[in-house]
Image (cartoon, rainbow, N blue to C red; front, side, top):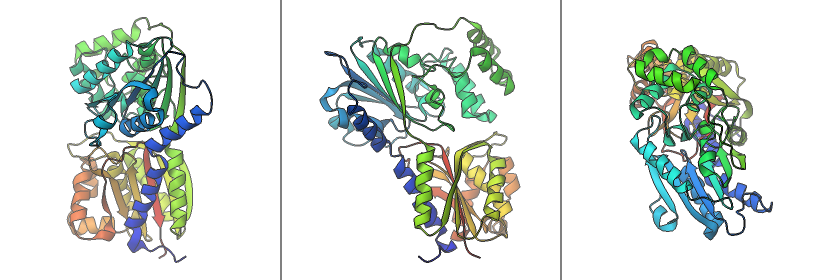
Length: 442
């Protein structure tokens, strides 16, 4: 096999990215899990005379629900799908799956549509009996899409915006939300009672903590109310809220917890970042690289991770592909637009300048790096020089969190080897972010 050429770096990255996405296809992941379950009598099966209900919530809810409906056939009694308003909806969804009601809701900050969708789920589950089973299909984005907050909606939105801008990890974010929202931290289990609940989960969380994915609607809370309060203080969130909202939150976190019992339940992880990264590594090997999967636990500030990734890239041997995964955070300081992956790639660019030929891509597996239609960005050893040529200031751009405008301008500059945005429709899946580093021969 001939050695990979830097001139082909964008196609190499797209090929590797698409291979990763294929390995965590939500339809296939759910179908395979249900096939396995069918081989184990009694797993997720209603009692005689019982009914099978479905709740699918998250960015991957539509393909997950389609897989379940196709596999279960007329055994499925009724279901609800809750997904992002920007999701691609199959034209024949309502006709082909009349038993499934679709609700489109807001993400990343809940709005009235999110609350309405959740109320529809709660109303449906009031009809369950002890002989029934509720099949839940949970994927990333569920925390915003499925919500019954214990605050007013404006106060809930204010809290979520403050947390999003704080740079806190998704683990901290969801540990807080679990104690301030009725559906989270096992709340969906209580709604489904007395029916048994079986949940299939697509992980978008580093480490695959099931209590954090989607804020754990079918998993007991990951933290105590006191720990949630400590996190709010750690990120100075109370000071950013209206006094009445801060008081209400503190009252909720010091009140007696709900102690109603959970019905029988079972949770199964069906796809995660590790599967995607392994497929990415295999595809990179097929393209002629010596490929390694280093870690799926990248976590921290996007600027710092960008500099770390650049150091890895510059030190990599020729013809090596490094695959990493995780999820960066961004502390919003400026007024610009961008996403964590665009910012990570931009922070890496100055350290790649003048080095060996290489490409570094930071990509969201859901295809949306905070901006619909943009999965992330590619930085190369030519990015910083091309930016200077067309008058772009990387330091100022990072300070204003305006990475999207930077990469747009670079795309428009007519130098394809200098990197740029990776445009992609929403993928329908979501298992964190991928970092792909390709080092070429000098």
